[in-house]
Length: 169
Image (cartoon, rainbow, N blue to C red; front, top):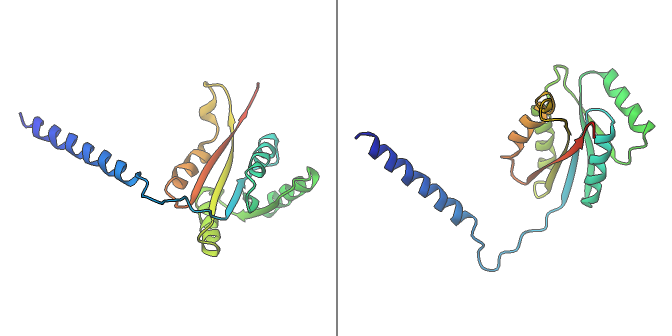
């Protein structure tokens, strides 16, 4: 018997939530989506087919500015990445962040915060190349990307795009 009031309150709360969502999605008269400068950041681990495809996709968005961003563990890894960048003639600017303990999410978020400080009105699109394997092995890949996407979801003026790289097909 005590469960019924709890359930009624729960359903009432859910109804209020849906009402608030509906209200916040209403288009006011005369509303036009603002045109914001568009900044695209392509995340890079190493130069591979997936990264090249992700850069191609990012360029197709015709952003106002596009860069590649990599989190490196040490100067040797950074040097190798820059050598690959030149070897494969990748046509966009490469930025690196040093993270000795291989932390990815926080250094990337900090970098995006710096970009936003410089240009608070810019729309930032983060392009993440992701490997797609069979359903049996997919859990072995992209865990860092999943954590990063979860954090970026709550960042204002930020869009996250996954570029799937089908492996073994």
